[in-house]
Image (cartoon, rainbow, N blue to C red; front, side, top):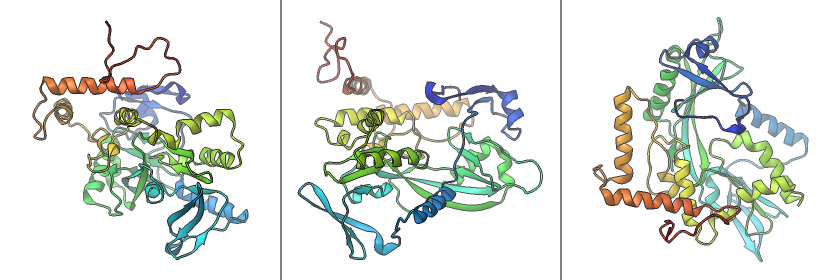
Length: 370
């Protein structure tokens, strides 16, 4: 809260101090000093939305093929096009247009850097009688708490990079519970109704991959991290217009920004690395992971501070992690210089609409002022 400033495009937003915010949500923890209120913010029940979508598809004549035997195992290509979609049951489907939107498993079908960020969550049930414990969505550093119209409260979630397991773990549940009760202590006495996990499809730069591919009749839509269901209506419209070759100019700007090519362009690794490091300041992870490329290394550690000393210690650990050796020793001047050069390289990696006033950087990203 102390460092967050809502983006200008966030719509109506109001800062509430400790007194004002408790008038709206009386059950907040006594240590909460304020928060940003977004009056136009809302939430969606993904399960109910999916059921509604399925019913709408059935009424429109869409044939849904579900179950293990219909899992797509490969795509067949010839002459720059997809000529077949092969399933586990042995069937091969032919289509004039193929959309790959299989979430965290996109890389099983196409060479895309999409990896799962597993999230464990749980729900509790509010009392049937008396005022509701919570009326609005709460979002804090380590947690979100979402009241639903049916009396449930959704609490989430861990961010576990590269974990494709469907296990619900004590560590994951403790993380969610502790973080949520730091914000809303009364949750401690509510009955747990359900627990689950999901796989967030995540790209290295934390933005979607959307639109055309090197194959003329193959399209992709994925990599939305936590925002898939929220952006689904716009995604459907964009892909529909693209397949039907009817994309508006303003929508083409979006497709260009999220294009497949950013992962394949010549010398694009420097820019991708820069974007991934920028994303690390915006998207938290529960624990660092190794072995899954850039996306495994980005993200800030989650964890409430027990006091100012704990916050200082965590910042020190962050510095040691990025600048020190594997034993956590403080980095020397050469490490600091390396970090500075990496930052300068990141700046040089970005492209601009106009280069009239931009001096050329050297191979390390530094500008020659001579």
